[in-house]
Length: 195
Length: 171
Image (cartoon, rainbow over all chains, first blue to last red; front, side):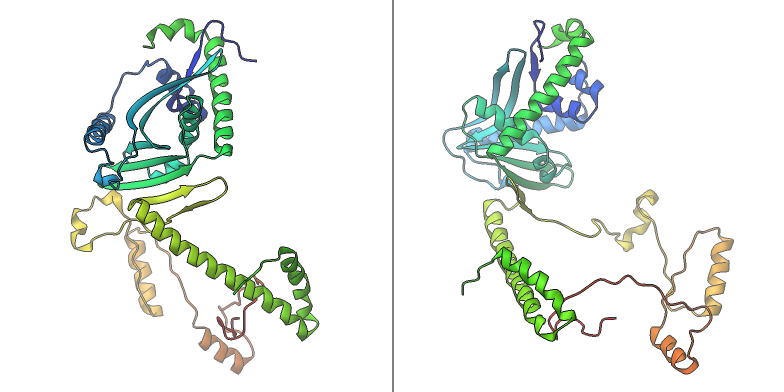
């Protein structure tokens, strides 16, 4: 049974995914925001995200590079969500776009849409939306490789199995990391650094 | 036309098909299996075409859609990049390896090429392709394989095809 000793583990997909892949040191740095380094690629990605959001807010449709689909109303570009799962566990995330019942995530860089579709991100975000009572039936990934100037698209349908598997994945790796942080006194050492 | 897939029947056909080894009449079972395979494959091809049309309508950048038990999407095979030989001098050397093939080289030329490559300390491989018809002519005449030519023990796989489709003389 996982306890909290007064500390709540604030789970996010990006940190959990790094932990899940076995890069524990980096996961801890992510979690406590110990590494403030931003590469030029990360800065470029962020800038592109801002451009996408500005376009979406103004034009009420996806950018042409992503197919230009008109958005269902209401829609929200950039929505921060958090949900309490247990006394020791909170799940949080930022949706790039939610319209109708579709979550859209914009990705830049060389990773393909299929690679994102194969990740646990869709499941985690679907769980988060469901816990926040936001209807979701699909997770769309729109990728843009700013080097080759190519775009990609992949969709993952949200099924009961996806939600169940996603929920279990969140619980498993959150409890693992939370227990580690507690046992090694890392909350006491670094938790004040989280904003 | 209505085509019903009865999976119990399919299994029964598969089991009865083996009887073709003992009686020619058993080929009816095999034909039914082959027909079933053909219809299913055609149906899947029609489905793939329809999915492609709908997927590209949904998004021209379409890559894949994942459901609970099925995933459909485009796959690409083969080398991703190729060299523009007219600009070879500009391509960084660490981005390619060149493999040179000399074609239809006779024995003397082969010897000279090997010597030259050895002098240049360049690793090389020689691939020989045997002229099967010439070997078979020799065997017919001499009742034995020529020295230096050996028959390969090739693995065998069972194949079931309709007569007239594919190569009936595959050996």
